[in-house]
Image (cartoon, rainbow, N blue to C red; front, side):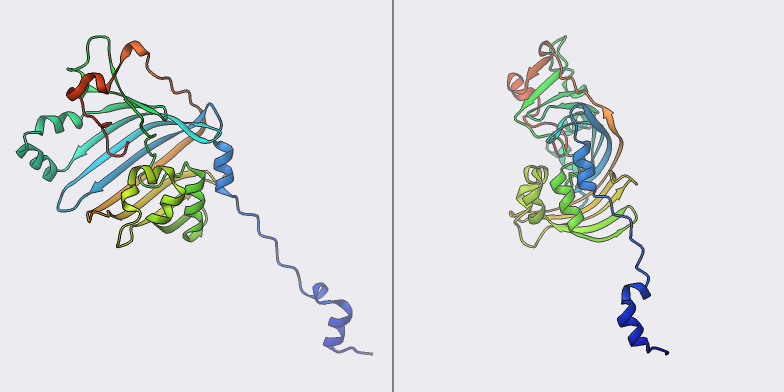
Length: 279
């Protein structure tokens, strides 16, 4: 006796008639991959550039190249070379204020060793103020420099937020947008460097692109930020950071005490803040 289609379905069961869809390979969790990489004695190389634009031709760029060292809780130290460059508009304004020589010195390359609680800075701009045998100026109570302003993708909580606010994820490319107030809640780096922009109106936003390796490690972060300060100023930042040599041996050695003077000891001879754009 020939059965009806409905009868066959009832007897055989739908699962025997319809092929089960192929199981997609589970997507790698980049946050877990990052957390696994945060191992004492290991680190990553970074090459970063950022343009910080105040409008009307007043902007500066900062290039950073170096190594970030890790511990179980995240970044613990950094050893970087940095180069700051001012736009012609800024240089013209500084010249009128009699600060052209100071600006020229600040554009000279620097080496910055960061321990998480102090920055040790060395470079040509300190050559005339440091006694012989002393090569470093120590700035206390500082934060680690961000690998990318304003998106510190080396913070697991920040990376998690960026993945959650994505607008697309195709292959290893993640694109998205996050509001500054939401970023400030999870990113210690953003809150410490750009906290004044997190609660202002209109709302500050950061659009970004993450590029991930086949193993889920961050290879590149590009961002365009439009930041409104609560005092009314507007800041635009375009930043790009490349990460390489994940898991490399990274031991950041601090200068010997005999080679260091504290900023307070030099009074007005050196800047009272750490040179650079986002230290």
